[in-house]
Image (cartoon, rainbow, N blue to C red; front, side, top):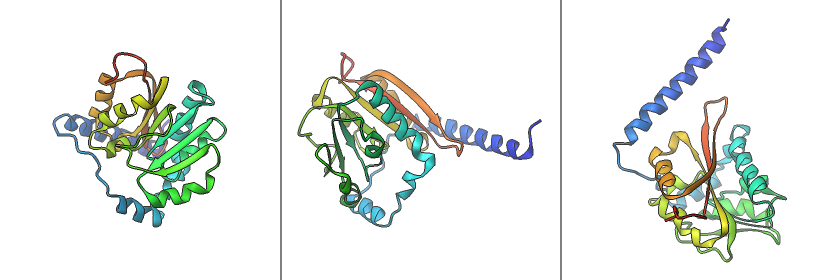
Length: 219
């Protein structure tokens, strides 16, 4: 027999799912709009510790899943973490990679990340849309940042020439802020290796997908 508490929780879950379904359908009839944020805004938010919640336990699953894919598919390789923030993913990857390079447009976020720099780990301030890596990498990660770009497909394609043979692109996007058309467009342009949908008890959920640079489907 369902208790009142469990009934309320189930009602909330169904309400969230219904709301998401409606918004996804409406997106199909609206032009794509990226989340445009200026560097000074990012810097102010990081100074104010407004992004500290990304280190909460309910955010762990997507970081762990990305790290798991890299551990299984490209262990001991080189990683480019686009939009790395304070380097939370790097902490999950410690011991997995040979070289790690995290880039972000926010100077303030990288101030928090750089104490972890060493001979194999580096953080650089850079505009991800035009950044040219100093070396070829095995994996490029877009962890909750792709919807901030005006031209997301072009940004992903930009990094193809910097991937080693059979290199991977791993993308994580939060359902509440992700236009469905981004995933649809990626599926049309890139070859899917694997993917998973993650849902936390709080109702937060993400999709994490792995694409490969090998194949004719890349733009």
